Image 1 (cartoon, rainbow, N blue to C red):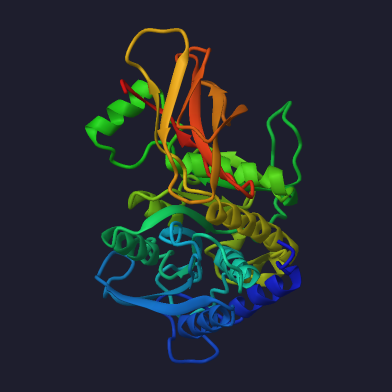
Image 2 (image 1 turned 45 degrees about the horizontal axis):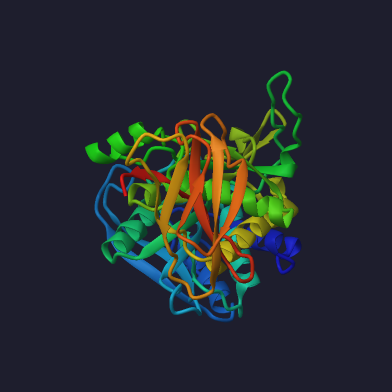
Length: 419
């Protein structure tokens, strides 16, 4: 976290905004303007990070509503490979989209600096790569800067679908979109705690996955697990890391995203991967998806002067801390379940061991059915079964693994089984 640099972050936001426009269909041959120059600069920045393998991921997008003639879409990808053989196949992502639009989504020529949306999120990706450069983590970290998000999450969908086709083990996606301008006041309801917008970041997560099978939907209904998807557990894990490392506070929002807007995490969700979105507490829509101009003395446009480098750095610190905990912790225990073979007042939990060799034990976490986050933890040691006296009807349970260094996995939600 100490390697995150606010001044460098701000300089990187200004550099990206300085390309004039990063519209997906903008100039690709110029060295100073357009999306081509931006992606080459991003690749060079990732290449400068020791141990990070940087590349351009290009594909041909077919004609669609916001790409009427189709287009070549190019994502920028960096990979820091895991050092533990038993963990290296696990992948954790930090994501930001580097493309932009102005007041006309289809206009690739006029300025679209996109400082907050989403140079800020792209710079979080860069700062994470710079901070982790040369480090050895157990699992693999992927730094992904996507294109054509503004045209319909095109770059993220291609990448996520391709990863699903390759059967990659993506266990967490941290998408950062609009994380640079905390100047808009966060309005609370009467009686709520007043919160300054620069003291926290919203973290959105989906509950029920898209298009679940009939059997999966029946399982969710039977368990009451509408708020216990892998993405929701990832959001809770972000909150756990923030408390442990005393970072910027995450405010968990139990929705996939804001109304009338979308983000790259949902493309990963649709492909079956756990993902969450980081975004500022409140937004000024005169600074997003509009032309850079001034009307009646009020400035419009997504320019760098509205971005706070220190806030971007604070969001990056939360991201990088979460990535380190995810990568160095064991994977969550397999198949945690409550045993429901007979009527009884107590609860017996069983699970399968995590495969990493440095696992030291397991913890059972619990909460009341109306609670948003885990409320208690029971250290049960290096076992695969534990019984508690309380009724399974009244609580939700999960199990997480911890290693010899004290890193803890996200909780795996306990289902139900007769064995």
